[in-house]
Length: 173
Image (cartoon, rainbow, N blue to C red; front, top):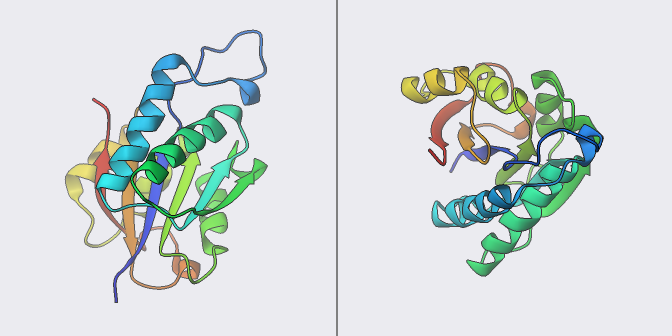
């Protein structure tokens, strides 16, 4: 049986903080390009998600919309999408709880979220069989539009610290 795959995508580059509330910060032009490129890269890597958990922040929703367009252009089927406030200011525990609640038929789950949660979750979930260089890299934090891939042999309810294999990190740098 193939493992379940959890992909943790940090939103693409947003406009700087300023007049708008943080939750409403849109993507910058560079971020729009990053998000499209991330979608194309996920498609090329065979990581089209069956289910997406997306923070309710504008920049994460825009990241997913642009990535989804690139995935669709590559022939990926539509994913089941859940946009939630729970991932906006999420802890790793919040992220784990959201993933544990994903339906059993989900093969590849994409979480679109924020730093430091994306890198902290990848490092915390990484267990036996993880790529040591990738673990060391995510422990330092990840840049915008980067994504990490974790594998899980059991069902989603088994998602727990040290219970997955961190096998890949893709960054734009």
